[in-house]
Every structure is written in structure tokens, then in C-alpha cells.
Image 1 (cartoon, rainbow, N blue to C red):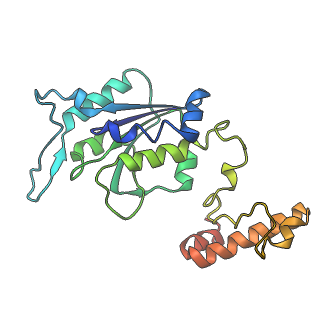
Image 2: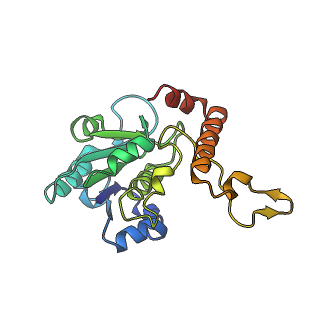
Image 3: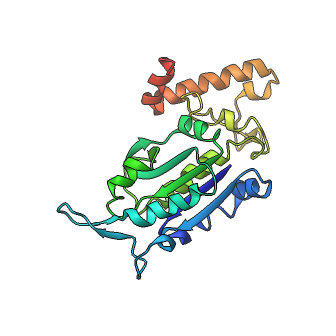
Amino acid sequence: MRIDILTILPELLESPFKYSIIKRAAKKGLAEIVIHNIRDFSTDKHKKVDDYSFSKGAGMVMAIQPIEAAINHLKSQREYDEIIYTTPDGVQFNQQEANGLSLKKNLIILCGHYKGVDQRVRDHFITKEYSIGDYVLTGGELAAAVIADSVVRLIPGVLSDETSALTDSFQDHLLSPPVYTRPADYKGWKVPDILLSGNEKKIDEWKHLQSVERTKKLRPDLYKKFSEGG
């Protein structure tokens, strides 16, 4: 998989992709993340990428010219399955969306900034718009990093344990069950006996029940989706 990220602040994205699972995926040749500075595609002599809005109100708007130039440059080199825009008014990004994107080959992520991008970018280039939560960030770089990380870890071969990603929270609209490690008894705080029994069937049943109960208590919205089979 290749993910191209378009941003006006490439420095913000240097660290997240140099470590841990993302770095491992790159070393294995399973994922490539390339960061592009939108300013490099501006025809303005000062490399401006924003301008005033035609409508009243404070805030600048990301201009169409450098974004179009950047997207067209990338599309001239390869085909892209999705062109994603990170924005507070996008569809909320979740595990199911990550699952779907992990099956793609090439993605572009455009990081929003200021009051957003010229609507014509969204109308003519963007295929998916995502928000990572009901709050506003300074820019879309952190959202792009979240999306890239959640997608890359799902690619077969990236995680050491191939089944690990399939048991994450949200995969079946359920939160993960509680987890424990050694020692089994720490200052009188004991691991549930069932986990020490060696009975894998009973352990799986316990884990599922714990997931259901935790989801019902902590995330009734997810529990409703689970109970409805959605």
C-alpha cells in the first residue's frame, strides 16, 4: 500500500511514521507513506496556499490551485483508490472504515487547515471525507496520522500476530475484554480463575461476555449496533 499525504506542515508528520509498527511496515515493503508539501505546487511567487473567503467571516481558505496541481501530479504517476480529506464535518472515522481502506492499494490524504478547502476541491477531487471526532484540531495532520496508522496495521504481515488486529476493539462493534499478564497474583489482586484454567472454549466465552458487558456499560451506542447486528 502507498499513502500520499498532502499538507502545508510536513514537519508535523515526520515523527509519527518513523517508529513502531509504521516503520516496521515500511521496512517490510508492505506500506509506503510519502509526505508532500502543498506549497511546492503553488504558482504564487510567495508560495501562498490560502486566500480570503468570498463569504463574510474570519479565517482563510485553502486555495484550489496548489491542491489541484498536487493531486494531478500524483495521479499522473499511478491510480488512486481513494482521495481522502480530513475535516471536522466529515463522516466519523471508525474501525469499519479502516478495514475497508486497508484493502486498497493507493490512497491520498489531504490535510485540512484554516477554515477548510475551496469547496470545488471537495466537489471534484475528494472521494471520502473523514473526521476523527467531534472536536476541531489546528490542522488535519494528526487526523491523517491516525487514519494512516489504523489502516497500515491491518495490512497482512504488518503485525507480528496475524490475529491481533481482528480482536481489537470495535471490530464487531464491541470493546475488547480486559487483559492480564503475569504474575497471576499481585499483592492479592488476582487474575480471574477462568483465564488460568486452560479451557480455551470457556475462556473465549468469558472474553465475549466481558466484551458485551463492557460495551453495554461504556458505549451503549456501540452496543445498540451490536445487538441489532449492524
